[in-house]
Length: 353
Image (spheres, rainbow, N blue to C red):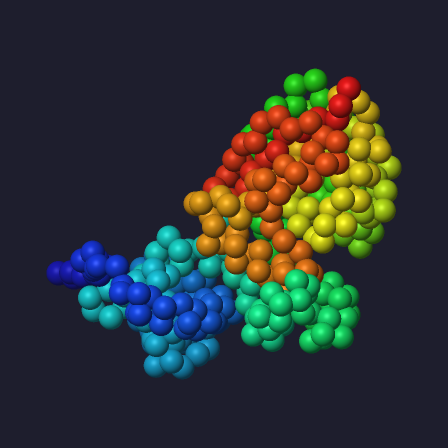
């Protein structure tokens, strides 16, 4: 009779005391190794190669075309942070975090993981002290041109990763935004600087009586969500307007959505809000959606993004107070401030009547 061996249970370590300050600081200064390990696993496709059954390092190495011993060392390092887990017999299984590195996971963070560890980041991070001294980005000094010019002219693979990361992030938050916003009385919604329009598409799908406009730079607007473009399911209710919201917003709507674009320099933020006020009719709603650096549950994440923005474009993530100040200075009336999900907040505003 053939017997089937049971799947080994993952190792469940006993709760350990918090590391002493000296050990915790050692862990922090080796943080680059952790980030590099996540990047390596994502580029190798280890999470995609690991199925539901435990696998040895040798089996995974064969699947991803790597050497077994170095791969075991990589997996051991990641397991310390809860990315993969080693079983008592030395095989590896998924954890909630390792599944997020899979390409097919609906909440995948694979491209976000790659984006935050792109080659340019390793050249820019060591200059953070210079950025803190000057208050401006260091990117142009290193690469001789602005961040987005560099991406699209000199770093095509990095630009592709950036686009995939932004698309993934937008698609994942679009459902949360559509669930949050009440569109009662709204017939026209405008997504300003809305990228490929995933938020707009989600709202139009949920509200079949609403029409929408997507405004973004020409190169971005040309790659809008297929649902919004000619021949798409939502095309008849959609207008795609190529343009720069910092220059003008030639769109009249009942509701304007501004998501994750008020994090450039202050002048760009001021101009964008001024253009919204110039375009909107009295009483129009303006919903601003941003990450906040003083949002306790996500502060480790948002403060890191804030420092990256300082490095690459001289921008900044907002505190609740700083965003309220900018919205008020623009002339908007601020109403409710509500969480969209664990890392985004929506500021519900209106244009004075």
